Image 1 (spheres, rainbow, N blue to C red):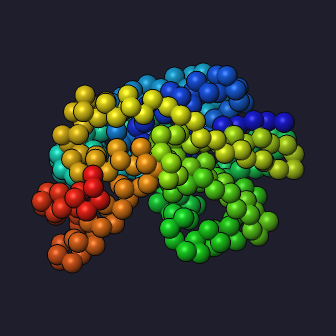
Image 2: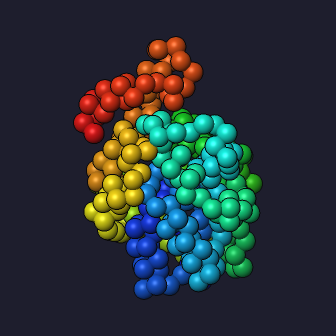
Length: 284
């Protein structure tokens, strides 16, 4: 019998990652599967990176990268012109705090992979869906069914949606551990992950939610200076952390709609005054 921890979507929440690492010290596992989105949207991303490097030294880790790592790798040198703003300020802040060795590390991680653990069924790892790092089975109707029907593996592990989920069809099983650093559970103040127990015939998931130092993490937003970079979306992130409601996503969708109505190509072309009106609407 094998026992693996499964995490995804840390989003730079080093306090949640610390709590997870403390948990597995008390409840040991044979390895850790990590499905990407390790940084961005947070203060002190270097603290998250140090914890990831420590985790790799102390545990057997099976890692892939997510869309957030793609954003950073695609914009080394800030070719996209990120700047302090509600649209991309936290990405800009993260980019400034990344070191060459961090980018080199991200480049070593695949976007998806199979994982074979001796004596257990094979697993397939992706961040969103196979072939689509941003594929979201929670938001796109019919996507999960299509993916599982075509999947040549018995188990698919995915993240990105920030929703804990297990579903089986076509003789295959999809497992999403939720988000370690940005849980969308309508509760808030918890870190989500899963423990997979494997035997020759199957993997049995147990979904977990553990508390972490949310108040200390929230203080770090102002102490680090990231709030001056991320503006309205940072306020959405912080409200999401304490409520479990994805105000960040709601704000993005609302601003994309306003940008379309205004006839501009992207939300980063919208003025900060429009973002402030959005903040009033969502009581941020």
